[in-house]
Image 1: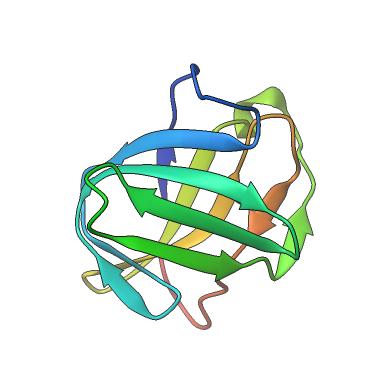
Image 2: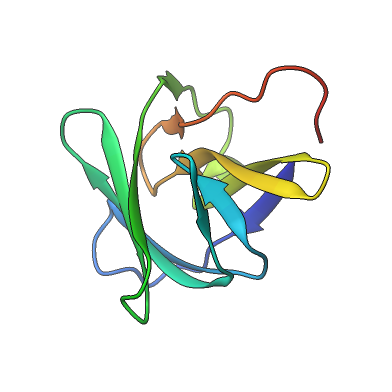
Length: 108
């Protein structure tokens, strides 16, 4: 599992801005590396868009993940299978985590 930590200074507690240094998949789509803004949405979804506005997506929350420490705050997690990195968890400030993809079988 790969982790990307996010710096404070977001526009609101349910948003985070992060530089993702590698291409990744989410919601069965491929996204290039770059800066992304993630937003908690209603109806069990999280939306995200690239800073340049060229890429955007939305993922469904499969289940909530209990926060075990403050270290869980402002975090993205990616599952890696071969060369493919898939967004699997989104942790927004002050909220429980969100599992957005569960990779079956062996992965990093």
